[in-house]
Every structure is written in C-alpha cells, then in structure tokens.
Length: 92
Image: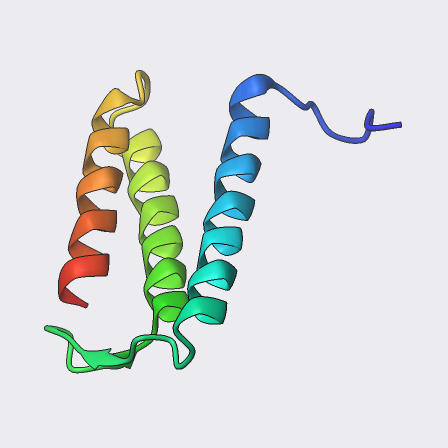
C-alpha cells in the first residue's frame, strides 16, 4: 500500500513530528485564540503558525546546505536546526 515511497523510521519520525507540532498548535489555538501575534527581530508580525512555518522552512534549508557543502553525518544540522527553532519561537 505504501510502496510508492521508501518509508523508513527517520522519515516517519519527521512526519510524526510535523503533524504533532500542528496538533499542538491547534490545541493552543483552541485554548487561546488569536495566534499569539507579536513583532519580532525580523520586523514581521507573526503568529505561532507563521513561526512554525519559518522554522520548518529554515530547517530544510539548513539540512540541504549541510548535505551540499559537508555531507554526512547529520548531527551538526540537527543541532543548528534545534537552535534555529528556539530562535524563531522566542525572537521572530
């Protein structure tokens, strides 16, 4: 049934993580509507969903750049991506 894609545990964990983050955002939106808008260091007015999108987009660029410039292993971009996510949700 799922033979169209090479489903591995790391791939499944990435998708589970993304869908879990979206689920948490839905619960936060139900609890406190409005998206927690704020203006951050980039000068943008962002909501929680915007910050999640910026985090995911930046993380994909970090991993692609690392793979293109350095290669394996991927522990370095994982640490950078976690730092990027913390920065985005606190300062953007």
